[in-house]
Length: 414
Image (cartoon, rainbow, N blue to C red; front, side, top):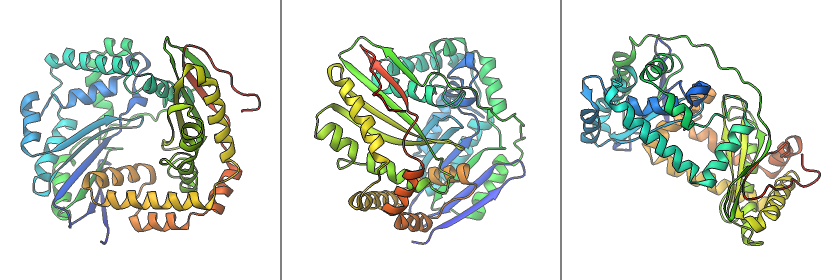
């Protein structure tokens, strides 16, 4: 199947990027607006998530119920979320309904009603979600790990704080919409059975007169403590470990990603085999890649009993340091098979592709064709990954633990 990637930049800065997948009956959109949790004022933590929720509580000529009903009537499978750099609105539907769905999302980001009557219900939903995180130690330790590993404001918790959510007023949401919901820096990714000329004309019609807003770029502040224990009265201990890596845009990203794939990629991976299967130390262990535009990280997690927490920390750190010695041929073969399977499945989903093309444009300023990714994956080798690890071994760890007792970092661990 040939891949057709097309792009168009409006005069106000909004980028439309699309992938034509004419063998599908569906179409999907992902709209990224440049207002994520990194823009939240320190005293209004959670403002971006609050605003995202409010944007869907009525927009344009429709009140909250009418807006949601309109999406449901089009059969839109929707998702929305907030990351550090942006807020995303996504919807997938039959290709024949794409234009109508796109008009609704244009209302949501350009003409949200922000009704006063919805503020308290939204606040209560946000507070309940925050409490759910507090009641989920595994989630909480990873939130705290990111907060300590990244410099402010890039590590700010997306869901904010009780104090921040309580302080948010209607004027704060309105101001955030004015600053963050803007065309310059926005990316609209579309994929599926689409008519490119008609889509481009509609996007010009819906967004062409959206005025640009200049906002000063965010600057990175200082790190907080890189080693911390959070006391929690429980029989379990949660362990979070992070270390620096390269961002998605880096020429060696796939080598770095491949190394993490050997560390944590299925039941044959090193962490699962060495920590969980052989020693029975924990009920859950993994490592995941996380990237911002200019920096990347590997985030590791292990959940275990308080009695075996120190041993678990020691073994996980030992596996991270052993990774610097390199990976083996059987690991690269398994990694390539997993990546190619994921690419094939992604190619069967317009929703996955709309998200991927928007993400690529944000990080790269272009879309990597699938053929290019396959070529990069095919070229991966133990030698190239091990050369990367020689120059970039896991080190300088940020470590956060949550449980009844603090743990000791083994001597010699950086």
